Image (cartoon, rainbow, N blue to C red):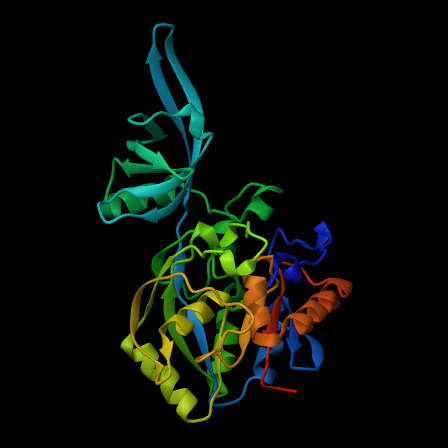
Length: 351
């Protein structure tokens, strides 16, 4: 498979920079193997059946983008430079891997001051990342990050506008519980409490799992031969209770429907011939056409970037030609794309 096999032309004005309001007012493209229907997310219960189970990613996005000052004393006096960092992932020793802009303006050993006693010291660097430790830890770190940080909007939104106070709510799911993500599980952004209540009332169960989405989700594929691409790793957990619920639903004939590619990748990482097992750790699973899904019967997901690993995942579920046709339909009918955009419900087992 070649990278170009997953390419399509997207008009820039279809890239959403704000979400629909209310959340469930976003459009929903419902697709079986052959049928295509235009709906809205609020219509989702009409496409579900009692006994189905939605799998939700309950990760919580942290305000991972920080702006501060690097101060340096030299023979010509004090100088300062504005430095922006984006947290990527914590290490076991309490340090963090971060991206810095501009990284060339800060040296190892120097500090970036974010104000009110909150600072980061640069320990080293490798592969375009810096490694830093912070002046605060534990709850003090969480409080300082909440005060000083901004939501880490995806590059295609950040290039069009800065993050603001609305993103604190808009870029977080209503069921977010466990902090650690630097990108949202965006298909889940369409759910509000009234919709979840309607789904529960009709006999559709929900199961929560956790996958902390990393900034690597936005990294482009840089090889022409897709088989040579190596996925970034992300930490996740499927509890024993979640695994038991998923297996019981499948045994009873219900459909397992992950909400978002993150939930899909996680339960497929935990799945084997005997079903889904409790699982905890890092996954770098790469799902491309030819992959055999063991836990996923259908998928709710947003519309993804051309030539992205997520475009490959949905092509694995529905077939590449079918997905390119669906994206053509979405573009022609002016669906909104990417993180704040509209959604699709992919039903490979339905006509």
